[in-house]
Structure formats: structure tokens, C-alpha cells
Image (cartoon, rainbow, N blue to C red):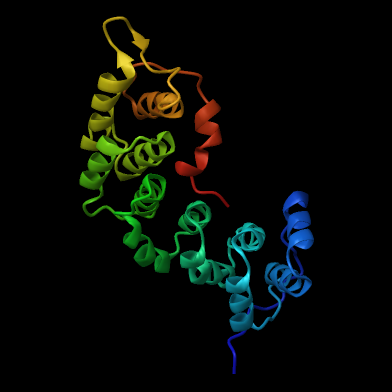
Length: 243
């Protein structure tokens, strides 16, 4: 007998943004679309067949399903399980989005999977994996790995993940994590003598300049505060749990 969804049917349907629903219905086979929306209502489906159908979709079409499933993961362990099963079948960019979704659900099974990506050759994916474990409370050897990754990454999105990871490890102003970030900031981001940000217009560091300066300020290391709220608000999912 094939595995099937066993949640009781809910009278409350999860609201999906219109564009996400439209993309799903426009680009994915009707049967897969119907099964995907049934997951949101927690109706019974043939789970084994559904996962097989997802694996057979091309990457673009599968993304429309995944982007819908991520709306169902809050309180829906079946949807989380499906994302776990198709994680390795996804492109790096889609993996990054699944990492964010399952990290915010603090999925215990995902902790084992994501550890395999701590040495990934993709800078962003590796940094996202480090952030994921730090967010979920995993601490062993992460600080040393973050320092190693910080010294070699050339991607500013990766820096955002690494900064946020250190924030989750310990955001007390006297902690070694925050003192390390302070050191990085004073070496690469800020000219103390002239009291100015040295790379705020450098596209290689643009986002992390604002992110890091405000992370330090909010932690109690008040060097300089940039446009408070803009970047922190956009990337708040790196710092706070979302529902």
C-alpha cells in the first residue's frame, strides 16, 4: 500500500499569494496542481506517487510546486517531508529557498541533511547551510568554519548568511563572535580615523555594510548606524523566525 497523507481535513485553507497560485495552475499539470492544493487543505493524497511526479517535473515547473508547498510547512509535517525528499533533486538556487523554509520550521531531520553542505563549493549554499544550523541552535565547530568562510568568500549574500550565523551563535557584545565581527568591520568596512564607511558603494560589499553595521549597533557595539531598517527589514528572515 502506498504512503498517503493522513492529516485530518482542515476547514481553514492557507491563503496563497495570487501570483504563486496563478503560476502553479498555469505551468503545472492539473493533477499535480490539484494534489498540491490538497496538501494545503490537509486532504488525503497518494504521497509516493505525488513525490514521484514532482521528481519527473523539470526544474522550472517543480519550482512552482515548491514555492506553493513552502506556504504549507508551518504546522504541516507532510509538506515539510516532501521538501526534504526533493531537496537533493533541486538546483542550488532552489535549495537555498528550501533551506530558508525548513530552517524556520526547525526541522530536526533537516539538521542531518544540511550538515552535508557545510563544505559545499557554492559559496551561497555553504553559507546558507552554516546559517541554518546556527539558527536551529547547532554550535559545534561553526565559529571556526564561519571565520574560514568569511576569509575566502567573494559573495555579499554569503556574507549576510555568515553575519547572521554569528548573531545566532552569540550576540552579546563581549562574545568572541561579536568581537570578531567588530574586527572585520573595522578592517574592511569602516575607517575609524576619518569616521566613514569605506566600501558602502562597493557592490561586492554593499548589502553587508549596512547589515553588519546595524547588527553590531543592535548588539551594543555602537560604531556607526546606517540606514536603519532597510536591509535589516528585507533580510529579517535571517534573524527572526517567520510563521
